[in-house]
Amino acid sequence: PNMNLLNFQVYNNSLTLLENSQQNITTQPSTISFNMSNFTIKKLYRPIPFSYIGINTINPGYSLDIAIGDARKPSGTSWITASDERVKEHISSIYLEDAIKKISSLRLVSYIWDEPYRLEHMLSKDRVLGFISQEVQDIFPESVISSEEHGFLDFKSLDVDQIYKAKFAVTYHLIQKVSSLQMRISKLMKS
Image (cartoon, rainbow, N blue to C red; front, side, top):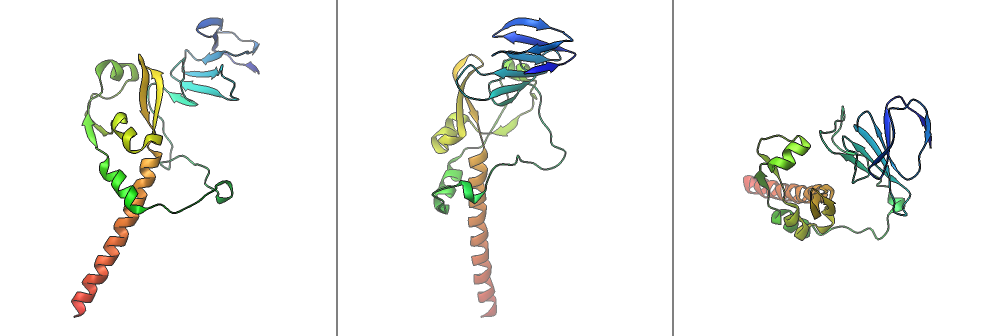
């Protein structure tokens, strides 16, 4: 594509091709970095029709990769996802007992980030709550993604979407239990 931007750098692999130019450019499979690497677009070399966008990284590893810092939405706490019944097949209800067993098997831990990783990603020194991807992989394998990062060939990252949905099933189960107990208490109070 052609673009006219005031402050950008163009990379092909890791070689700088063009820096701080004020002219139109046409890019081939390459990485484009804007404002001293605060925003990067990386065309993938694989035969798939999309690119990676990175913020605060010149080497994004995901469709949207915010390497340092965080993200904010002025309102709302989640992303919008496709959910229309017309694009889903083989729909069935889940077994609540399975979701309860999975959620009950997860171990919530507290930890402090390893110092080199914390410094690289500007993370807090404070103790935080979370999960260990290797443990989650045994329970929710679809929630763990492996990639080559931070010197590891199989660095594990966590996608908590399925865990949140299983928590909904557990909440639904608890609501049913509470309703049942309230009915029993009401009957006992009347007799």
